[in-house]
Image (cartoon, rainbow over all chains, first blue to last red; front, side, top):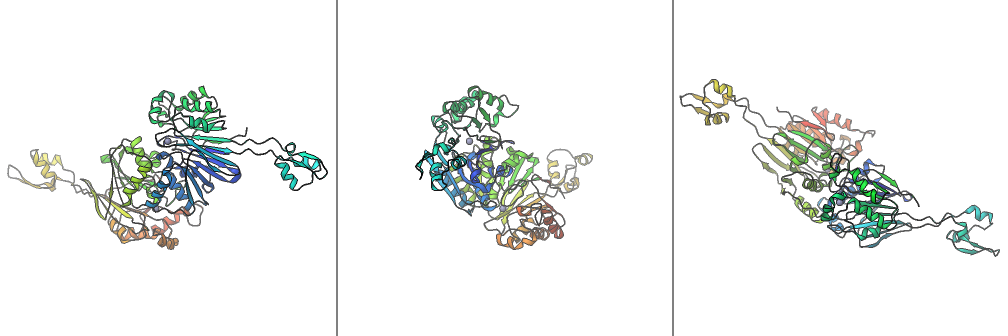
Length: 309
Length: 309
Ligand SMILES: [Zn+2]
Ligand SMILES: [Zn+2]
C-alpha cells in the first residue's frame, strides 16, 4: 500500500501545489484508488509513475470544486487514452447528478462502466482483502472522511515443518493453513496454528478532509497506521478555521493524538503560508509536532509506503 | 496584441501539451481574453507571465470537455485569488446551463459578475477598438470560429506641422485629427488628412477549432494577419479527420491559402504524433508548409506578437 499525494493546496492551485487528490496504490492487485479529484489530477498522474489504466475506485469527500473539478476530465481521458475496465465512484448524494449533468452538456460518453455510489456512514465497500468505511466530518457542506482497512491475514504456513512432521499433502494443508486443529489418519492431533507464522495485522489508513476538529475524524482514524488530515490554517488563524470549518495544525495533531494513530500526514494547506510570508509551512509543521511528534507535511508527488506493524 | 498558446493537444493532455486554450493579451487596456478553456488552463496561466486578474472575456468554440472543463476551476479561482472585476463568456447555447449546473452542485458562488452570452453567427462584441464576430464551423457538435478585428485608426496627428502652419490650438485640432477639412478664421482651408500620418490598419485574428475543412472557416479568416486553425491529423489520416470532423494539416493550410491570411499557426494535435512514432509533428509541419509556406506549429507557452502590416 503506497500513498502518493497529487495535490496538497486548499482552494486554488499554486505553482508547486495542486488542489486535492491522493492516490493509494495496491500493487498486489495492480489497482489505484483515488481520494478526491481536484482540477488537474489527470495531469498530476501523467507526471507521476502512477498509471491511469489501474484506476478502479474514486472516493470523494465533498462537493467543493477543488475536490471534484478534475473528475470529468479524468474519466473522459480514461476512456480515450487509458485502458480502464470500470470505475466505481463513492461520494455525497449530489455527485451522481453532477456527473450526469456534466456528461450531458459536454457530450461525454464513457466507453467503460462508471458506477456512482451515494455513501452513508458505515461500510461502503468490502472484498477479501479490504474494508472501506466512511463517516461524517464537519464542514460547510456534507463532508465524509474515509478509512481503508486491510484485513488481518493468517501467518505464512511453514510447509517445511509440515514435511518434517510427515503430514500428507492435500486437503489437510488447507485446514492447517487456516489455523484449524486436525486429526491425521495415524491418530496424531496437529494444531494448525503451530505451523503458521504470526498473524499479519492489516494496515489502516484514514483520510479526513475538509473538516474542523470533530469526533467523526477521531473515530475514523482510531488506531490507524496513517492519518491524512487537512491542516488548512496555522494555529494563529484558528478563528478563520472555525468560521470556514477547516482545521488548524493543532486540530489535526489533536485528532491524531486522540485516535492513537501511528503517523499523521497533514495536507490541504492555505496558499497564504507560502515561503517569505509571516507564517510559513515549516511553522505549521512545528506547531503540529509539538502536540504529535510523528507528523509529516505532504507535498505534491510525495509517496509514503505504509509499513506493516 | 500578443497570442499565448496555453494548450495545444487534442482530446487529452500529454506531458508536454495541455488541452485547448489560447490567450490574447491586449496590453493597451491591460486585458486578457481567452479562447477555449480546457482542464488545467488556470494552471497554465500560473506558469506563464499572464495575469489572471486581467481576464475579462472568454470565447468558447464548442461544448466538448477538452475545451470547457477548465472553466469552472478558473472562474472559481478568479474569485478566490484573482482580482477580477467581471467576466463575459461567449459560447454555444448550452454553456450557461452547464455553468449554472456545475456552480449549483459544487456550491460555487462567484464574488464578481459572470455573464454568459449565447452566440449566433455575426457580430458578438464591439467597442471603440475591437469587433469580434463568429461563424459556424463544421464539427460533431455545434462549433463556432471567432474573429477579432482591431479597428483601423487614423494616422498620428503631426502637431509640429500644425504649429508651423500657425493653426490655433483648440477644437480645430480635434477636427483635423479626425481627417476633416476645416476653414480657419483667417480664411485658409486646411485638409486634416495632410496633417495625419497613414491610417493604422487594424490587425485581424481568426481562431478556428474544432472543425473539418469548411467555408465558414475560410470566411472568418479572410485576409487575417493570423489564422489559428486546428490540425488534429496528418494528411495520411484524412479518413479519420472526415469521420470525426477534425482537420488535417492539408485542410488547415488550404483554409489559410483560400482566405489569403498572412500567417497560419496550427494547433490541437493528436497525441498519436508524439516523437518516436511513425509520423511525428515535424512531418505535419512539412505537409502544411508545402501548401502554405508561412505556417507555424503551436506549442504550449509559445507567444506570438501580431505585427502591424
Ligand atoms: Zn478543500
Ligand atoms: Zn477539441
